[in-house]
Length: 131
Image (cartoon, rainbow, N blue to C red; front, side, top):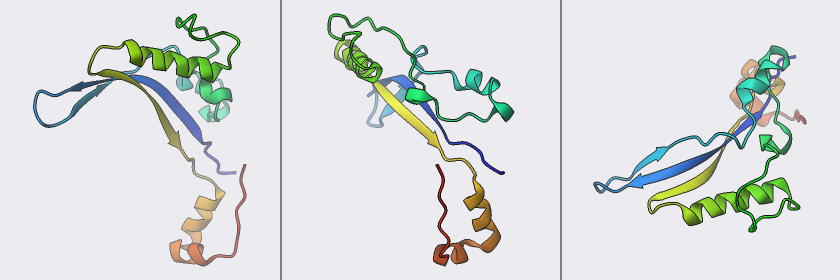
């Protein structure tokens, strides 16, 4: 089968905006320690084909926002509370953004569309189901 798996990369990135001139300039940087390292995950997968990780790869951890966020809350809620706290206390011009990077992989239906052509594919009565 010709499947490349879909995967999602999510990064926490501080965003710094400078206004030296009228153009907007942004600088993004990566904050490690929150999401699974997909390069490392891929090393343990057959043919390095990574599937979407549980919880979108968010690591189980505690955050230094106590007492504002309880360990009894779901992991994603604790994480969003943490990001909100970072933004609340970050310097002027700096903010933290959660960026989702998603890639849909090549699958059987893509191969078939290439075989029959785009116009024939659009009028096709064939339905493709995938998980």
